[in-house]
Image (cartoon, helix red, strand yellow):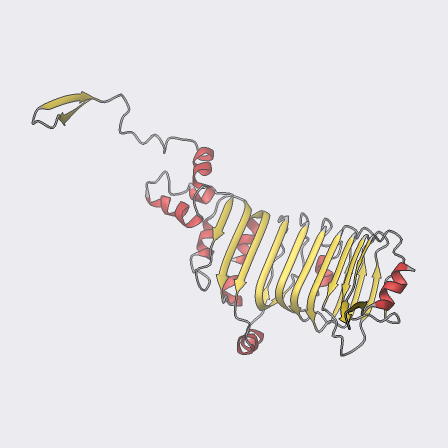
Length: 316
């Protein structure tokens, strides 16, 4: 094949092109190679390659990772995009602002079916009183069972949420729930205990509402972190393998006495930055404990512990 070129002086030369020049060799690559190329792009950019040709139309839907960055309220394209996805998702990250239960429910069940790895959902929302009152009046988000996910991090921005009534989180090893307003007939404790979370190793619950009575029974848990569980009245944890246990600002110090029954004979690290009453908080035998953190304050330049009773009992 020949092509005419000018030498700049008006003369025309004929240049020979190598065989195959001008061909779309990129599209001829196998799917797994094209997927590796598209993984270097943001998900939105990768999806735009669908307009290149029929060959490219389905490639982005084979990506094992899906990321949607903060772009205001829930993008209406998230649901159709996940529904059109053809591959299992080893990583799904969705970040939005001021999402509603309805907007999340439109795509979350489909995402749960695709997930086989890590899931992160961040709903950035306001923290003023008016916004919290509005959030409390909204409908409840019915959370699906993430049957194949290994790690789940949900920051719901204080949306009301109900744990799934049925299903087993068969592969889940790490669960973090932040800014959740728990509602519904299924309690968090039922959902995260061993029958439904047989492999769970780490549980963290931060800045939550609606957990007045929390009971966790797990044969697998190694770490539990509970922070700012507004309204918590009673806590029961039975976890024979538990190594680390943190309770931070969950019980109201100036209200009812904290009631807790903790059975964790293998506990190595305990952080109790909360109200404590030796008559109502039972910790059992902690023969393996190596680290204990409690409240400390300074009185006339001298550091004293507010949980002296706790330290006396544990270190006795």
